[in-house]
Figure 1 (cartoon, rainbow, N blue to C red):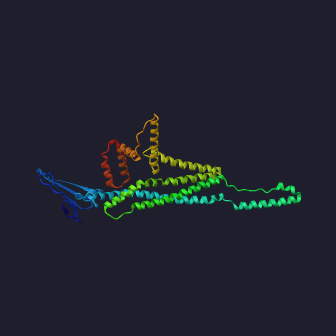
Figure 2: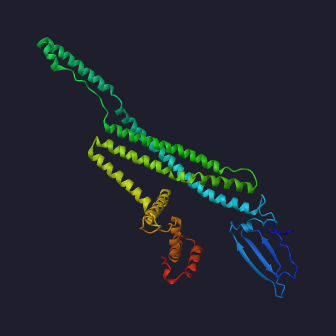
Figure 3: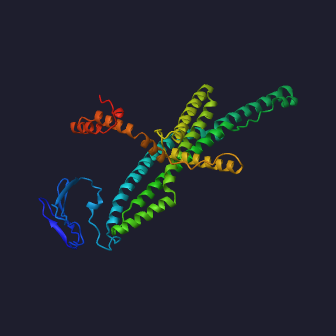
Length: 394
């Protein structure tokens, strides 16, 4: 197979020339001409062998992901060679996929590290003050000893004045310093909160190292890159790395909840009104948090989707199916079909509202842009929409 080279104004572009078949067994003969420019023009000339004139069709493509044009076809029996086109395509596609996945993880971990550091500093300040209540106060011990000494002196004076029988009436009181139960609870909750926060920081640093090792590029052919990358990706799935990273925020949320609880107990010993206000704030905050994680389970168009919400939906489907199976075995209930994923439910809603979304999309594009060419294209596209779905463009 000999390559056909065509000269252009900028540089040469080579394409492999297809093998020609004999006229009696072929219906057409095809030659391809490519011109390199800002957009690539491909001209296809067909020469039918039935006496008809040649027909020429051309199309312009600017798609950088048209891999059939980006990479030359493989030689025969070389489709799985170390530098085969399929491996080059895999490297490009996996690079896009990994870039989005890794960038999302890194951004989430960076935010988590900053929040955990600030939260740990706040909790440490509180704990430093309250942990002293668990220790014996030396000042109180000194005051107690001084009181006992005064009591002894008074007893001696009573003996001198009233006789030995007066000693029983002036026995010095033995003072103890037990810690309050609230002190144990407050310090226990806050120390646990601090421990969870520091644990989250440690795990987040470890996760960033996992990500770094996953993205390390090894030298080798495209086939080697593809195999190494897929081996690492399968390891991520096998060891549940995505799930672990998505559940890191749960630890810091639990630490925040324990801190609120300890703060409420601490304020109860100071002021009932302040404790009531803090209780209201804590209950409101965690109610909103719970609702935001539950709503996406029942409403596919809810924008409050988080990794925890997705796992809550999976847990809901699992429990629902288990309960239905149990009731079915007991002779009652209905075995529900498996639930689709949240992504499938969202896609189903998009398909159902296709025309409405198209109209809203065109209306939004027309209103937010000042580019006249974009507005012209939008107006042309509106002619293909059903009349009742054409948006009112102000």
